[in-house]
Each structure stands twice: as C-alpha cells, then as structure tokens.
Image (cartoon, rainbow, N blue to C red; front, top):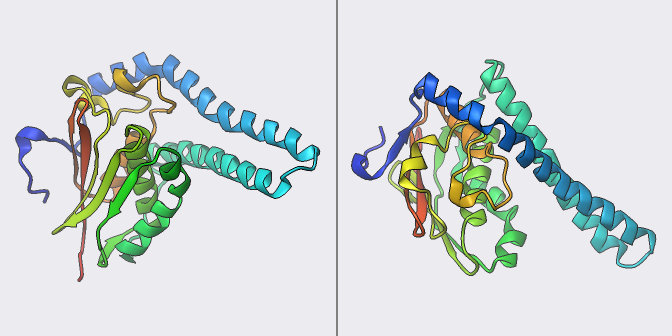
Length: 241
C-alpha cells in the first residue's frame, strides 16, 4: 500500500471513468497524429542529414554514433506503441522475478547521460542497492518514461533526484509541473497538459506507465505543482535489503 498524504496526490492505478477517458481520447486524436508524426520525423530527418554528411567523409564515426542514437529513439517510440497495443488487447504477459533495483536504475540513467549534459541538469541517484520483484524489461520502460519526463520538463541547469524511501521509489524534478485541474488526465492515451504542448512528445509515456503498473498490480502516485516541479512515487514490491 502507498502510504502518503492523499490531499496532495493523484493516485493510480484504479480504472478511471470510462466516459471521461473516451472524451479525452476523442479530443486528443488529432493532437496524437501530429505529435507522433513529429516524434518520428525529427530523428528521421536528423539521420538523413547525417547520412549526407557521412557521404563527405568527415567525422564519419561521430556521425554514425549520432545516427545510431536517433534510430534508437525511433525504435523506442515504435516499441512503446506496440507495447501499448499489446497491453490494451490483453496480449501482454509480465515476467516477474527478483531484480537488482540499483542495477536497473543505473542502466536507465546511463541512457540519458547525453541529455543531462545538453541541458546541464544535475541528477542525484541515491543508493538503492535492494532486490525487488518486478518484470525487469517492463520496469525499465516505466523508469525510462518517468526519467525522460523529469528531464524533458526540467529547466536548463535544473535538478532531478531519484531516491528510495522505505518501499517507495521517488523521482523528483524542479520543472514545469502539471496544472492541478489536468493532473487527473495525464495518464490518458495521447493526453498532454496544455503548458507543455510546445515541447516535443507523443503523450504515450504515462499511459504506458499506467497500464504496465496496473498489470503488475503496483500502486503509484503523482504530486505536482505548476512551475515548481513533479514527484512520482512508485511502490516497490518484495523489497529485500
């Protein structure tokens, strides 16, 4: 059970009001098409440009590495679309076993080293050397989305903190935050809060997080304050020191 002050949090994973979710989905379809097209077009355009540079023979290795990063980004976007489809069609079967939380977090944080450097964001990762019960690949997808959001919506030279408090993992940023009236909607497919729609994104991340954690029967919560940042609390199951 997630033991936190309920007056400052929006809890998940209980199912939302179907009529509300249907309306949000309907209102967001056009935005989703534009967002996903942009998400896929941006790295594709970058790769095409880098291929032209590679033809000239200068800095070939550097350009190949950049192309690889952009292609990996496209792959992750498509993997998330496929995963969301599987979950919603009840074709996703989690593989739960004991995993080392510190190792999993370290692997995921490593993927974002370049973005951290680009935005001069400091990231504090507390010691979390415990074993937990989880589907490792599903957990990585959850953490990627949560950490990616923390970095994406942080200001330049901001700070992100990841720490464990008992049976909770907390991911906190000091970024744009989420308007209070929109907080209950941010896990709907393709939904994006109005204050971040100028920032690239598909609106899939938190929907995928919600569905994965619901399948794993894991409780989580979001606390956010506009222009002050967001904290995500994630329940850890089967913690062993």
